[in-house]
Amino acid sequence: MTVSNSLPLGWSRQCLGDLFEFKGGGTPNKKNPDYWGGDIPWASVKDIKSQYLTNTIDSITEKGLSESASNLALPGNLVLLTRILPGKVAIVKNMVAVNQDCKIVMPADYVNIDWAYYLFRAIEREFINRASGTTVLGIRLNDVNDIPVALPPLEEQHRIVAKIETLFSELDKGIEALKTAREQLKVYRQAVLKHAFEGKLTAHWREENRVGEWKTAKLGEQLSFLTSGSRGWAAFYANEGDIFIRAQNLKRDRLDLDDVAYVKLPVKSEGKRTRVRTGDLLITITGANVTKTGYVTNDLGTAYVSQHVALCRPVEAMDTEFLYWYLIAEVAGRRQLNDFAYGAGKPGLNLDNIRSVDVLFPEIDEQRQVVQKIKELLSVEENVTFSIDAELIRIETLRQSILKKAFSGQLVPQDPNDEPAAVLLERIRAESGAQNTARKMPKRKLSA
Image: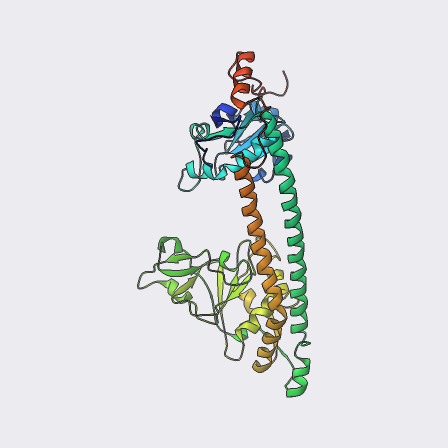
């Protein structure tokens, strides 16, 4: 967010360092048990998840606090991330110590704490743009202090916060309704798949065509080829080249190449055995998306799978799309894959797990009828789900638009009776005679 050359009435051009005092944190020695498990909450990156910081995963002792670089943030401060996820921020509700990836942010008297929170939300992209680092992004405190901002009068800050919270509340209600609708659609989808793999969708077709009963077999018996990706692909990443299919490309139970990586393999490479073909099934076998499945519907050219993805090539007597729907049905393949993946230890599947899945299936002609019925019944559901996802994205865009208007003076009207921000700054500085009015750090020790 850039500060306009022309400011709204009563606003003042400042930098973050003019509005806030920043203090760093630290980590007590992990090897010293006397430092850990005490009564002092200790915040790190994983704790900054929402507007308010109320709980932390870890805690430290007073000794751990006093004998480390950690510092205490008090209620009314903010905690700002300057490493890993620079720009993320939360308001402190209860006293908390922080680690070195955080900065304690203490607003001046002329800054409303809630306005400050939304300010950091609005300029989060600025932190990312100023950050550096190859493996971990970080931003220096000098660069934080120099970020330009526009400061409205204190009374207007309150009006801005009230308007933002009213609008965000309406957006949150919309998000909740959309997510509820999406969950209901998932229930409907699974109900359709349940009927499909109980043979109910094609019962009339079976009577008319006098076909045989459904059969049961292991998935491995219905595959002509099964493998998973090789390790060591990082050496072959490129800006262009052959498509490289990763677990995140299957996270919605379909092959999605919007976020695609590319590789360039040597002429002789073991990884070439994982080249995919049209009609191949792809199953995520490790990570957060384990069991998520998709299939290759069209010619991708040259494409390979990562070590987190299994490549399954069905035999000719097995319709790929029938098998795909079977594997994502909770009453069928998904339940079995989940049992394998979450049975013990770290979630994951191996190729023997995939081979062992029980498959209930009819002859190929009825398989195609099942697929046709599923697609007919789910066509509207898929369109509505797509619309819901698009609307959720639009709402988040609208949220950013609200913040942009708020911090450029376009969200609420200016009041000529408000004390201008520049006048307020000068008055407070003159009255205090100190540079850091009401922004002193708490003592590092909890007791005298």
